[in-house]
Image 1: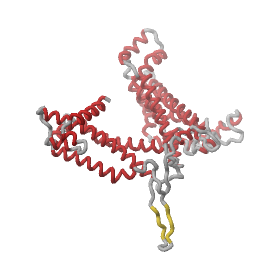
Image 2: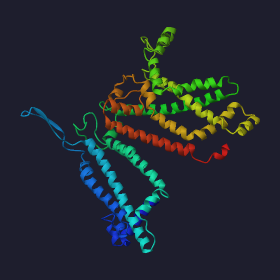
Image 3: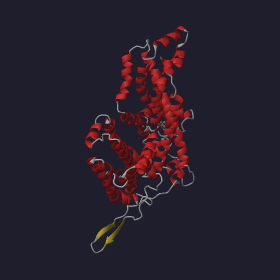
Length: 470
């Protein structure tokens, strides 16, 4: 913020107190440098200015001019009886208009920032000339970029990469949420246009034709329940497993560690696909349950319907939710065990010994010393795990890829009871081309993750607790 104020302050000073060369830089950006003998730098800045205007007017300008409508001329095809061929009339491409238009706007913002900064720089050079100070040449400035300002050189390419790979796609996705881009409005054949907040309204609407509100409320609740349970079951399970393996009375520590680490070595998608087949309606687990009488017992107990031929581990709501969490424990606990093992070995021994001398039980030591120390060390990782589980695509999608909902309200919104927000978003885009609603869900997911992260960091991790664990 302070740097922004300085830029505007220097710009104002340059406009009001600058000489003819400085003020001429308002029109020709390299004029101030040329007037001070920095010919090469002046030519470079002038070429950048010319390149900006040429690129804007010839490339991005025509697209930015159509940003308000996202195109009005639709592509059409007609049959020409004279040539016996199909003639296509070139129309607007809404997708290209939006993407190039966003890039054009960002380039204009960047150029304005450069223009303001350039004016302040030229004015500072003017004051240096008036005071008889040395003014760097282009070669000297380049040397600075390899020495005192080497950090600027290193950060330039990554910053451009972040802009191209992260910022532009995010802005594009946000803009899509305010359009009617779906299966019926697919460019380049068809146009899409701005619809304001109607998509956000639809996400919270439940009616006979629109059931997104119904599906969203239930999927959001399941997403939050899943994120909390998936995180803390594997977290606590990993700590308990680490304490068990590292206990002085446990035999074969290397065997137990190896047995659990093997699950990490196997690619997760292979494991999950295999487990989904094993727990399928006609998989090996159901076969075993039928043979040993578990299925018939559950039927007699009224847990399964009288005509059920299998246990719906991954094909019925409730059953599927519980199984997903249990399977995730088996997958996630070994990784948490490795983390916990390293941390438990670094708990100050003096604290543990003092607690035992004072008569504390093992449970009291675990609850009062071990867990607070673990939470202090792994706090940021724990918050990250919650956010990662909100967006945990693999476990949910691979385990429930064969799940089919019988709830018409879910089906009408292209959702399933076992979906997270992230898998629902994937289904909307990949299977149904409903990009507008997927973008809305993406924005909502981001807001939820941002709020959880901010609250967690400010309430759980804030404060200076280092002295408690010294």
